[in-house]
Length: 450
Image 1: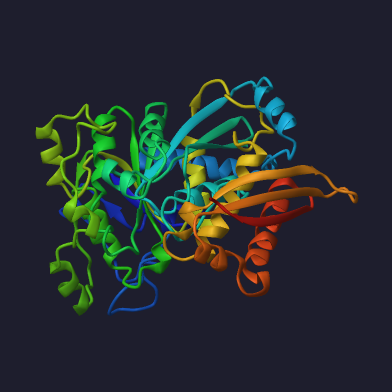
Image 2: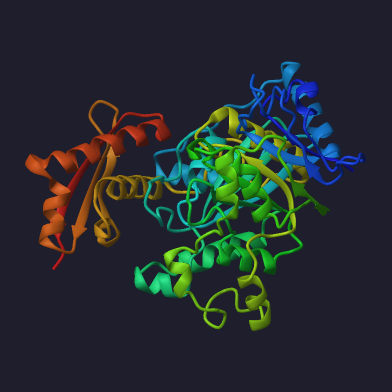
């Protein structure tokens, strides 16, 4: 069975099939880029431009995916993503409502795992069509597992968004919640498919799968896993994508051994390919932990073997995309729709997430704190919701008190003339308005914690 690398142009199978992997010809087990390829090169004889939003998959799955696109072209309508009810009791009632099962219901549970700040929440938001998970450039924005529900026609995709996998020592160092250690591991156990996100723009991590991720995959070899190379739009040298893919998959996709070869390779690529990926600063000092974390089921010998690995040789498929690009993410969404298996829905079709409105509010505020405050300051701030109710003009009035540990942190939060805290309140209120589909007036106040 051949493997194919497919572009975002799924509607034209002639374009998709220009690049073959593992053919029966002499080039067998080779990734071959033709100079005139409309998908992977554009109008140049001396080189190529690698187009993002590609994925590597089997012929059989590609045929199923193309059939799914044909059905979409026939004009079948999709449900619009639901909103979150701003009343806690109503949201809980919706979550408890019996699922409205269609005649031929299909379901797929997807666990998204990866290093902190790999883009898991951004990808989840894009798949759902609404921003329900907090996103920032700092690590550990997501502090506990949350569920996103995507329902279209007879198919329900349950997205299990998890905190970035971290070690016990890092959790102690940053005073992180216990959930950051346990939730990703517990989530993978209930998934039908595991999505491993790697930030290819991160020079520390793009050359190898994070050790914590490898430990998680090694404990759940029975669950299919796919690799998603994220943030390809930020990668300046696109030709590196093939080399990165080979490194992270150990040269094996869907059980087929592959060798990467490009027809034209820029001179600078020769230099970069000889460089070994540098370990991250934290990875240098990380020991073979196994006695005090959820991965203790692995023996010391297994951990030692994983430590020497750069990648994982059991990925079923590989995607290359930018999670901020809707067109890119739609390809991954279609993949999930086709991969869904017959089964009962877990949630009513109007459910968007299992989070309470208060959780979404505090997570949104945390996002702003992480975005605007430096270094470790936002991690020490705690929140308390003081007011949640209807305003005079039908808007939702929310008042949240922020507790600060140090006086200088308080000055950073308030800003000159209260501009900083006012800006965060305004932006967080606008985000909440789009989630609740209702005007939100958010007030933030700060108090020094004694």
